[in-house]
Image (cartoon, rainbow, N blue to C red; front, top):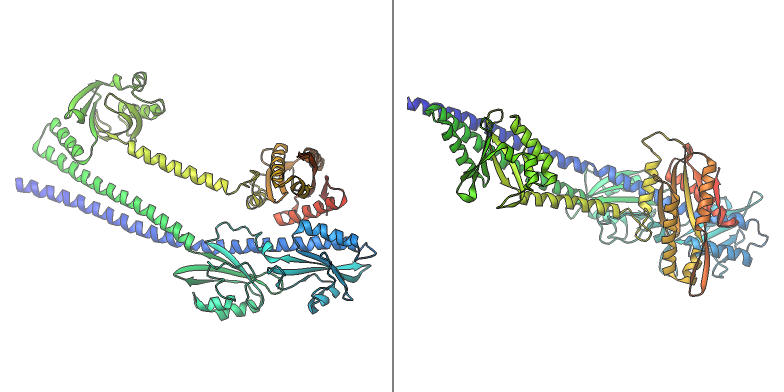
Length: 629
């Protein structure tokens, strides 16, 4: 008979062990499948990111070059009205534009070869294509050239028309690095770009730490690296010669580099935008580490659960087989808990209205309490439990009282022996009059939770700081562009008109020159404070750079409200700043564009508002103009 009983117990234990083994094996396979597919999914996000980078660089580069052309066109329109194009008045106009535009040198020329620039020189590098493009009434952009300062520059020229006939051109030499630097890429270790001319020579700023930029040309670099998917450097070269766009992946020092290339539409220049897999690898590896920790905890939990289940089943079978008393069963369960954990066991007997706690500190001496003594309000009255823990403890207490299943409760408790966080867990007996549970010290667990929460809060603060201009506290260039684009695609239905403001401070350069750059910074901060006080909640305010600010106002009721807001800004920003007996009156020129179907992009709004802004500058300053074209 004993052999038969022993055989039955072995069969039961074998069945349970087999079942748990299957669960463990299934969990391991599922984890491996999840981990591998998660890694692949993360790496698949590379292509959209590098295409987005390429588009961002191209749009910014074109926008900056268009700004240079627009400035020359504005000056050209004014020069056309002058009888003497080489007069001091014309040169003064070009010098003023040069001061605010970033051109190193500006000048004017006619088709006969006569020329004059802002340095007083009377010659220009009169290249054949320059003469031909101007004669054909085309905008001319040169290939790169070296300046006297040793910098790389480009020459931009726009035709001057008088009564429909080309008479000459207004030109300017602009440092290429100033255009390239307008592209804001904060993570320059994982993302970068290069611009090459029609021969493949690098014409953007040197980036020696990156894979592209080591040699003199891009074709020499690509010959040194392994390009994936059967693509060769010759294939890429042929596509570039055809003016086509494309993507490829090459390997350098064991790291993948995703490349998107496209023509810039200028002298057959090409943009190569690159994003390394380094950042994604780091992110994927971090996900793997978190997954491994989770799996380790899961595995330990399953093993512990298996041990507890096997032990409980074995002891229950033993109790039934030998007809042991209920006290022997509880003793066996308590012994198991005491062996596996450092928890304090307790027993709730609802039929007798009592709770028995087995105190580890006193060699498991029994301490008996009435249920009323551990009532939530009773513990609060004696300061044995914190107010913040009261709701969770009350939920647990009610579940015990009504024999319902419940989650473990983590409460902050205070007794004669201890003060700190404690986890109360019901182990067995749910649905019966006798309930067994454990009390566990979880101070360390709560400290870890607090550390994780602090870590997540720090990450959020860092992300927020990366969007803020350090001087004014407004959105920086990248953030305000993103905010405007987000506002142009609203989730809710529009209630009025949306308006885009570009604001440029008048006489700001004079503040820096006469009162010092410290006062210039103070003016910028004061301007930011004034702008914030003049806008509503939901409007966006940012600083593009220098003394140029952007406002995006949502849901204005009518155009008259826009004009009132512009007048309010002009009045609020018209101030006199003094220092050391000197003073400068600062105002603001404002260009305004109303959002429509034709101007539903940041670039289109900026172009229209910028055009209106410069019209205000040329006319009177300290005013505003709404672009209606």
